[in-house]
Image (cartoon, one colour):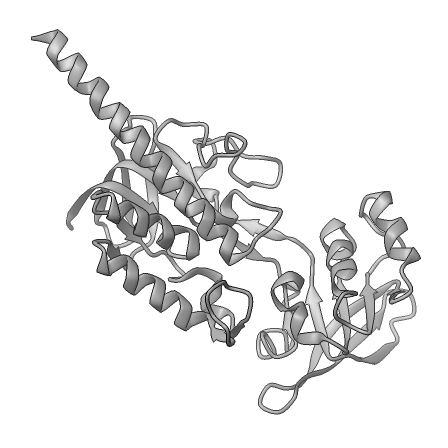
Length: 325
C-alpha cells in the first residue's frame, strides 16, 4: 500500500480529466490522474471521430485518447491505473481517497471527471454492432448517415431531440417507442409530429440488432409488438439508443449536491461544486451537450479555477500562520 500526494488530484481520464491535467501540469501542480474503470472514457469505445477540432480526417477514439494522455504525461502529469472506492471530502482540503488497490491518494484540490455512461437496451447484437450502425449519440455520429435511413429508440426528451437532429442528415427517421404515447415535452412532440421526415412506430420493443459487424454493419432491427407479440424486422442503416445516461456519481452521493438525475450540480458557468476545492467537469456535470470538445473545455475551466482556489487557500493559510506567531 502506498500514499500518493499531489496538489491536484483528478478522478477520471476522459477528455475532461486529461485536459484538466494538461492545464494543471503546465501550472506546476503535478497532477495525478486516477484512470478508473474505463481509462480514456467513452472515446475509447468510439471508433470514428470526425468532429474533434484540429483533424481534417476521421480519427479513432482510442488513438485520440492515447494522444491526450501522452500530452498530459509529457507536461508533468502522472497517470495511475486504479479505481477510487472511498473518498473523504468533509475534512478537506486536502482531500483523501482510497483506490481499489488499497493505495491512498491525497490532493490539495480535487477534480471530478468520472463521466456518464449511456443506458443501453442489453439485447443481442447491440454490443457487437456498436459503432457499426448502433450508437447512443446522434450529434456524435449522425453525420455518418447522410442520405440514409435511421431509427431512434426511446420516448423522452432525449429521443425526440435526437430524432429531430438526425433529420439534418438522414432521409428518413423513425422513432420507435414501446408505449403508445411519448414522455417528451409537448413542444418537442409537436415539432416531431409535424416533421415530414419523421415517422413513429408505437408499442414496439427492440428485441435485437441484426447485421454483420464485419461486413456492412447494422441492417435491421428485430421488433416485438407490445400488444400482439408479433415479431417483425425493420430494415434500417443506423439506430440510436436514446433512453438516457447515468452519471458516474455514486461515490459522491450525500457528499456533493446533485440534481434529480444524479448529475453533479455546479455554480452556473463554472465547474465549482457545492464543496470548496472540489471541481467537476465533463459529462458528470453536463447532461445537455455531452461532447468530447465541451468536456475538454470544462476540464480546462476546472484546472484554471482549481489553480486560483489553491493560490487563495495557500495565501490565507500563510496569513493565519503569521497571525498565530
